[in-house]
Every structure is written in structure tokens, then in C-alpha cells.
Length: 281
Ligand code: PEP
Image (cartoon, rainbow, N blue to C red; front, side, top):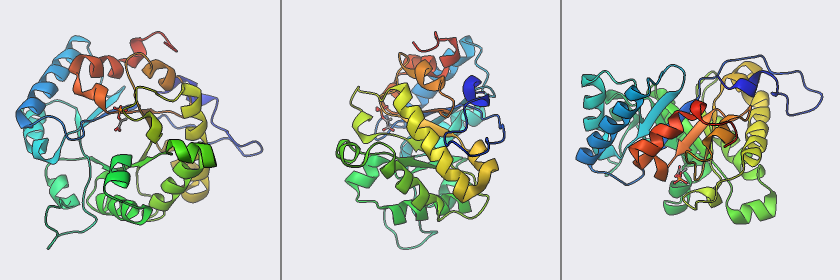
């Protein structure tokens, strides 16, 4: 549970506090286009040994990995064989159900592999593949339709930050995607300032909290107080074992989407064990 979450949930003055909901922190590793299936197996094995040594409680802090498509079957087999409670995620999916879509992968195919989360709208897809809000929302809906929880990635570029401030673009991106989900659908939001991704320059914990609080506040109006209180909002962008404790001490930050640092089993393990770190370190 996020310790501070009990008290500081009411970002907007004059509104009733949100109901208290215990949100399980989620630490998710986005491997991007790294690691073949053999390297993937080796990494998950090392990670699981490290977490076993540390007596990690997966019900206290959930752990997910998002390997490339070609690794999913191998990682799934390992997780099943060794009964590892690490959750499998996909980095992308098609908005289409099936058919003549060369190169694409459907939500149903992913669900069959035991995939439980799918990233939608990662900035590298928005920028490198010209994915807009409409498509991101359609992908979120496709994931939900197959029983996969979409992890909606939102975030402002450095230029957006200068022009609109930190929250406007993430808010618009989140609301556009959520609008395409049916009522009651579960989703996770990953706030990832684009300028912080892979740059080594993470946002401050306070910056992340301010945007996460705005996102949660906006969710109240579209999904209601109960779901707004229950929805996990992650921070992503140059997360490391040095800064994770600061993010996790914020009341509206419920986990992290970790890129580069998730490729090193020891470092990712340390991030997952954020509760052991000195608060604010
Ligand atoms: C990401 O791409 O989702 C990410 C957060 O990357 P990094 O941790 O390397 O900044």
C-alpha cells in the first residue's frame, strides 16, 4: 500500500475526498526492443532468484515484465514451469481482432499467451509510428475486450511542457483513451514525461505527484470516484534504484514503468524492493 495515500487524495479544493482504496504498487519493466528469447529467460531467472533471496512478497508489490513479442512464449513457459508470480505484459497490440493485418498481433493472441497487461500509447509508438489518440484508444479497447488490462501511457514532450505546462497533454491523452473503454473497464495509467524517458533526467517526485494528482482528479469526472480511487497511476522516465523511493512516497504515484533499468536484473530487483530504501533517497 502507498503509505501516504490515506491522507492526500483531494487535489482539488472543495471536492469531497475520494473513498479510501488500497492500491497495490506495480513495478513494470518495459524491455523495448531488447533481449532475444534466450536472454529473456536468463533475465527472468536472475530476477526471480534475486527476489527470492530478498523474500519478495509479490502480493505486496506486483511485478510485471513487458518483453518483445518474440520472447513472450518463452517467458510464459518459464513463469508457468517455475510458478513465478511475475506478470506478463505486451508492449503493443493491434486494434483489430484478426485478418489481413500483416505483422500485427491481436489481443486474443496475447491473452492466449497469458498476457495480462498491454502498453498502449507509449511515446516511442506515438512518435516513431505516428500513433494518435484515436488509435491508442482503439488499442486500449481491444485489450480490454480480450481480458487484458491496458496500460495507457501518456506524457508531454519538452516542447509541450514549455507551451502547455506539465499536465495538459497527459490529461488530454488519458481522457481520449479512457473515452473508448466501456464503463467499468480496468486500466492503468503510466505518466511518462517524454523528456525524461531514456534521458537520465527523471522528473522530480513532486512533479510526478502533481501530474498524477491531476490525472486522478480528472478521472473522477469520467469514471466516478470509486474507480478513480482504485486506478493505479505509475510514473515512468529514468527510474532507478536511486530515485524510486522518492516517487513511491507520493500519494498518487502507485508504481513505476521502468525502461533501461529493467534490463539489469539486480537493478530492477532493487527498484522492486523500494520499501527497503531510505524514504526519499
Ligand atoms: C520507458 O520507455 O517506458 C521508460 C520509462 O524508459 P526509461 O526508464 O529508460 O527512461
